[in-house]
Every structure is written in structure tokens, then in C-alpha cells.
Image 1 (cartoon, helix red, strand yellow):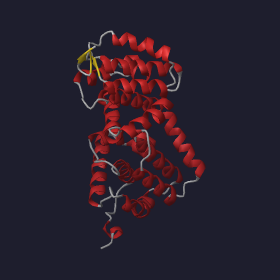
Image 2: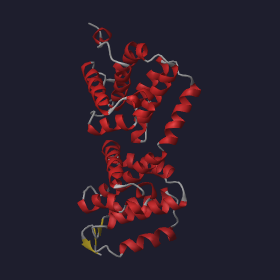
Image 3: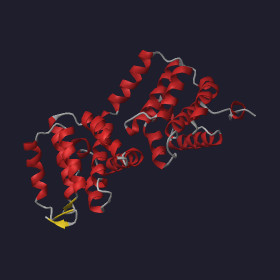
Image 4: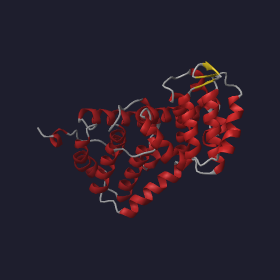
Length: 293
């Protein structure tokens, strides 16, 4: 029996949309509790999902997850056939098709970048639904505008995590300070504890999937952090936040110093401004790489 023959029939409009969300977030990672929260968080991008109460939403998501598992839709090669043979017959209205693309794009951008697997999903939607280029661009612009604050907060929290793991050691004081020092950096400073908890989990997901590799960290700082924290005020705040996290345990490593030095260049902060900020935090440093200053 072919893959198409094995496809489970009879998903509702809501379940079909949610299956697309699950597929999008399953292309390069296990579909975890965080991904379930994201599917719910972004559901207003596909307006029919807004009509579901929590019980109905959970039931629809459960069936969508089962559908994705049973049909092996975490494999990118199966995605185009899934969109053609299952989504296309139940998502027929042009506005719903545009919204489903917007929903998938919003979910894909939750980690601040579109990876290869997510690109396959988005391309399959565009081609199968015959979504015009101007409609595509409008959907993407709407996502970037609506989630501007969230994206900036994720980048800010990820910066803190990069500092924490720069030396290959994870100190609990530093992890806690990613949260406790957030008032220094505007995109996360205005979040309450519940909001920050979600942002931290999303940033941790980005960090663990992409930022353990030094080259990826450098690219993230240059291409994501620098572009999102792109005003002088935010740049100075970001450097102060990184300095606070790096020195909270009264020790600083050479690897952390290297990250801070690189951050000065990436954020276009001159040496005088950077030194003035850094020296305030060096007052509490007793050791460098565990050795007395």
C-alpha cells in the first residue's frame, strides 16, 4: 500500500490545521510539550482555531498528533504528498489557505530562523495552495509585526544563555541570573515571571538546537542579536545584561571575556562605553578562570 493510500481520512478543518502545525514543528525536533504550547500560542493565526474552547482544542490537537505519528509525517519527503492529498481537500477557501501558511510561518519563526525541514513545509503549502507572492509576503510581514516583541525577547534570553555556556560549564547562579537580571534589557525586562518562563523555554530550545556550535553562536550574535537589538540603547543594555550574567558568580572565564569582547564589536559599542559598563561588574569578580585576579 502506498503512502497516499495509508493516509487517514476524515480529519476536520481544525484537525487538519493543527496537523500542519505539528508537522511544521516536527521536522527537525521531537514534538514536545513546548511545541504543544507553541501550537496553542500561535493558533489565532488560523482564525477557525480561535473558535475552539480549550477542551475541543486539546482533543483536536491530540488527534492531529496521532495522525502525524501514524503517517510518519516527521519525514520531510512525505510532506508534499500530505499537503496535496489531505490538506488541500479540506482547506479550500483562499483566506483559510493564506491563514494556514501564516500559521505555519509563525510556528517556524518561533526559533527565529527557517530551517530546511520547515522550508519544505512552507514551500509545499505555497505550491499546493497556489498562494500568490504578494499574499505570501503579506502573511510573513503580519507575523513579523505581530510577534516583534516575542522575537526580540527570545533573542535577548538566548544571549544570556550564550554567556552562561560560553566556558562549557553551566553554573546555576548564572542560569538564575538570566531571569533575575532581565530588568537590564528592555525586551525581557517588561515580562512577568509567567511570560518570561515561556520565553526562556523558547530561548533554551533555540540554544540547545543551534547554539552549542561556536560558529552557529557567532552567526546568531551577528545576524539575529545585532539585527534585533539594533538601537544604541538596546545595544548598551544587551552588553550590560551579558556582563551581569557573566560575573554573577564572582568568577569570569576567558571564554566569557571573549564573548563580551565579540559582543562589543557585533553591537558596535565603542571601547570607552563598553569599558565603563564592564568595570562596574568587574568589581564583584574575585577570580578569573577560578584563579585569584
